[in-house]
Amino acid sequence: MKFILNTDYSEEELKWLKENNCKILSEIKLSRTNFSENEVPRRMFKYGGAYIGEVFDDEYNEFIWAVLSKWKKVWHFCDYYDSLDSLEQGL
Image (tube, helix red, strand yellow):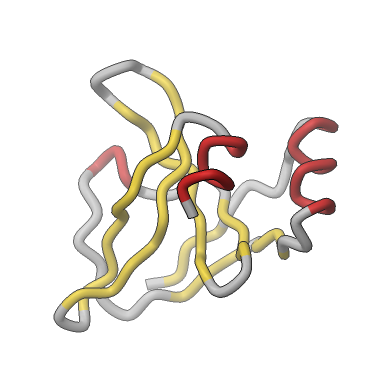
């Protein structure tokens, strides 16, 4: 499945992405996914060797950052962070 991604970031986000040598993704192709309705990524970038997606947290009604992972040949999101700074500290 191919996901077309939003590439609009705030100035603060762009600064963080640049400082951390991240690559903004405009699309990503994933063969098998196990995303819930809210986990379809809105925006994504590559941070080091990890793919990070912005997904909706229905518990708090806001977007959060999550690490894309593969388990048993199926892509899913794990390790959720409420900000780019907490993501940096967590990884």
